Length: 398
Picture (cartoon, helix red, strand yellow):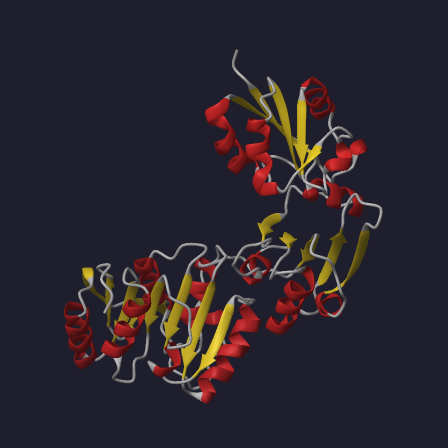
């Protein structure tokens, strides 16, 4: 007869948090395996390290065996990994459990049908994008991204005043639920098993394009909205992308990129002190807290940045080839877009893209005209034409 393995969601790890289906699966199993933290859920569970759960369940030889996992089997769970390990040895059935999201929001009396859910538990990444563009964000924390560190990240980005609800050791005897500002909670110790619910009522709308009228401009040149919309679209920015904006100026393109990379980070590189000041103001004004401002001249300022998925070059200071080379060195498949107003810049960018082995190169000239009222009439006023060059790395490092 074929063997059966149950992967059972143990909820918060307390017996009274099990579903009826989970109890029946455990009762029907000849052997049960759990980590030390979840062993209390079933008194006859054999305790073993997580990385040995599947092997122990197989080695036991029982016709029916159950393996306990925390929370719910479909919510940032190890169940998928265990299922792959157990499937060659028999039928695998998943039994759902109570997730930390459900439990915590119920404790707070808060609905969770409008919550953005992210996990930083043992994962790389940043929460700044999710918080920038969602009114409520639930975060699983742990490891290098423990709850106080996540709160400090918010504070460092200028979001220290946001209300944050913290849940530590949910369902356990030493459960702790506390609410405060991100800045206040950043200074309090917390264990590795914690979740956060972050409230940002003034979150920006990531789907709204950035219009010129939204931005503070000063005397710094700004890429007009029609040009930046086309330029950014050429980059095909994905939500979790890491993006460089080189020669960021006022941040007009930067903040457009930040909305597209709504779960990623945008590094705005700018050498002018006046422009850097405007960048900071526009970042606050438009709520793009997933933007990191790097003051310095390219390409030197690019050396310490993480590898980009895509790069926009709005101002090169005559170093367009070295900027593209630096980007391709870090990511041979990087996607790039370059804006050029002068013919000399156009030719330099074309030559650089060809010499560096970029593929799928396109050149578009965009000349937009805007209507303005002149008495009872509408007169069209042309903006300067701009060349937009785009391409993708060929996969070969420079």
